[in-house]
Image (tube, rainbow, N blue to C red; front, side, top):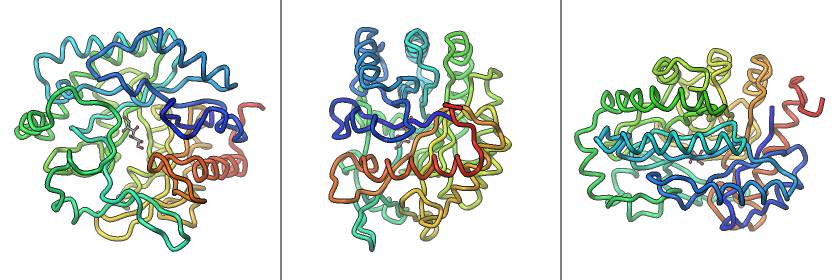
Length: 345
Ligand code: DNO
């Protein structure tokens, strides 16, 4: 297991110096966040990023995300050139020693919440989701929702294009993409790690397909390469009580290339809020999750995912320093407790 920490680059109030001081964290998860999905990632920028991370005493081996252009998800003819750009980016990242690339296949939106700062009784704030409120958001693009990569087409045009896209179309377009990129990733020494949809159900009448174990298995069957793998996100999958996370980890095994650990509390049908990482705080049994990782001999990267905002911290919702630092220490403690292999052993 490699304990990692997400960093949003220079715009992030969390610094590499902060991350370096968290015991056991060796590696940073980041991306070139300003580059639209249609563009090549400039090697000079990657070289500077890698040098900056290494100068701080950390490693750069995971990219989250290398975004997939909407035209690829829509299956438009322009996908040919865009898939070639994606392949070239994978080759470049491989040359820089990046081992894992996390991406998602959610139409238009990445993760979605209806409240970015729900107060908890302990005085902290967390992000929450209530599906009943989705219907009352008139224009999701105008709402204050998180989105990490710039779109290069007007939201209205994209919304119109998605009107005729079904879940079956999305599966076909994912297959088309994976059959082309997986061999390139494998040759480049990069493991692809598809992130589940968050939340794992349809939003704004857009299809979402990466929602449960059957879907994850189907993804693995789309391209027969060990590089075609998954990000197992306990927070995304864990809001559906039907998803048995430890069992999924045991069965998906070596095709899990990246572990995201986040805890959530299910408060109703398609309603949840995020919580601190410990099992006692939410619906995810983190110890059982870490035991499952131990059983499969997991050696890949893990990062603490969204935390609360505590101790007066402000910043990127879900990505404050303090609660994620508490979280990663807790996860590392569990890992030690269940007898997981430490990298310094
Ligand atoms: C949320 C993250 C996601 C993830 C992307 C991967 O905090 O886990 O935004 O980075 O879905 O492409």
